[in-house]
Image (tube, rainbow, N blue to C red; front, side, top):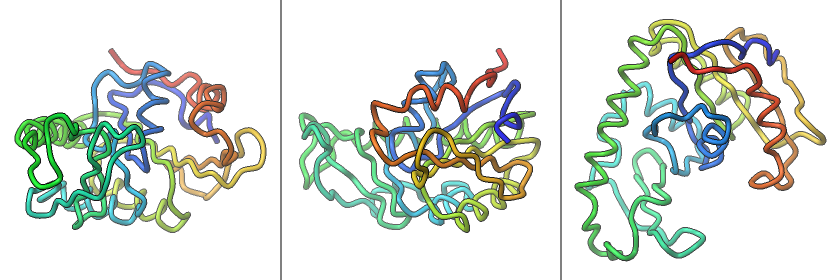
Length: 208
């Protein structure tokens, strides 16, 4: 099934889960610019489908935000959009903000809106798109596939990765041509799986 991923794409975006898709796209030379869900935590995949279906309406609007903690290094506040259950993990440095006042919010929102506009433009105009998502259930992945089928004008592939595997890359055939599903082992996902990602993204190229 991974052969269905191969070929040229006009754009590649992470649809989150956490930071890992962005990291691996970067390592494999497939991330020339940032997407709106880079460096964000989104455990509920159904909310990402809703976000895409609503074309990011009111996403990260200030009235929906709440500070929920700090990132693992303590350098940034974790700031959640409670409406969509998406958390900005590395966007609000503690050196510039407080838990009561997010002083860097205007700059953050300007950058985010630019990234959203780019993604929506690619959804409308790109002849072939690759979207990468980590985490969720099979039902949620199929739901996301269906939303993308409605929102993306031309061709796309959705690479969906979960961590229910036992060894190496396990391909899961769910019978949908544009949904490529794989399971990876749950161990050492941050530092020990570069080779598996290289294998999955082999012969995937960005059209320049």
